[in-house]
Length: 201
Image (tube, rainbow, N blue to C red):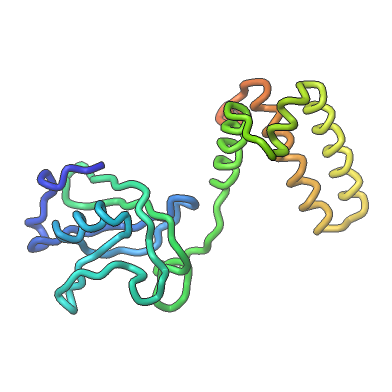
């Protein structure tokens, strides 16, 4: 993942700043400091561990609250003196109970990318007891039909002016559109690029 011996700990007297990012939302959660031992422990336990400058000892985030930061990946900057740590938070990160120490909200469209990738995996693996698997096995015509049905139901919900109903039907429509895109081997990035090209015009 990283080569600890190549990190520059000299700038901060044996410490290195570590920015923690939620791997699911890509939101910044907190900033902490790590030394060589805390990095080694983080890699070993897969739980993000810092060095406390006030208590002068190691502390694993969540060891008291239970709100651990589960390690996903570590990136090193170009000067080898800062870390970008991607983690999956097990609850609020800030001691105040907030999602982030920087008062950012837990909102992101990255879930749509994750959903698309999940559907892609379902197509390749076809696990049992999965509605998505059933759709792919039912064939292209059935998938296209479902997109049409959900589109009509979305229109009806909009005409009924029921916000909750609209949200539910649009969610169904997006899901089935993602299934159809996967069936046609069209990447989500292809759609994004098309939209970006229209915007630039």
